Image 1 (cartoon, helix red, strand yellow):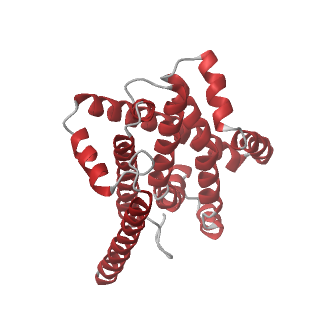
Image 2 (cartoon, helix red, strand yellow):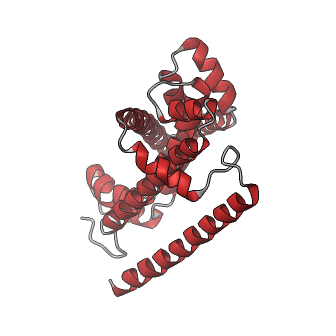
Length: 261
């Protein structure tokens, strides 16, 4: 426990140092440019940032973007989990699935978004694009986690005729869960970034991307920077929540020599 607190304090200290360096670089760049239409100052951005929380349209936009991001991640997560499980028990399926994953991973996001706008709506297209971007990453995480399960432990479970349900809940899931859950925050954070980008390209109304597009069109650069800051903070919060979940699921991991009967 003391070691964890020490690590936490050290990480927090370096995080503060990193933020201070970024803010200093931002301020130096602003002083050099001296043009808020090119680069707004920290004070201007923070003023717009706090002003956002008094606007009802901001909450609607943030809620819509987060909802689409979570739904897209959930769809990719469930699909990736199902395909990874099938890949674990069927080698030919894994080979075929790997080829499909490679194709999906190389799809150009902008081209897919523009194509989907022809077939769907500005609200649906960003969600599909986000799911397509996240799916290969989540699938690879599941496959890596499953392949990392202790084979000797699984063989021992077979020798002692441990029930399949017990193997799943007491060996496989405890080994896979911490690794997968630790990546949820990064996945959601990436999903949010892709979602906002797709919303900007699609000009999705009542969304964070839509608000950014409006701010850009009307040259409201401090407001644009404030909206960007909101997305960064939300992404960081998602990753922090994921770290907390990993610490909780870490207690669930099977320890060497644990009884699985």
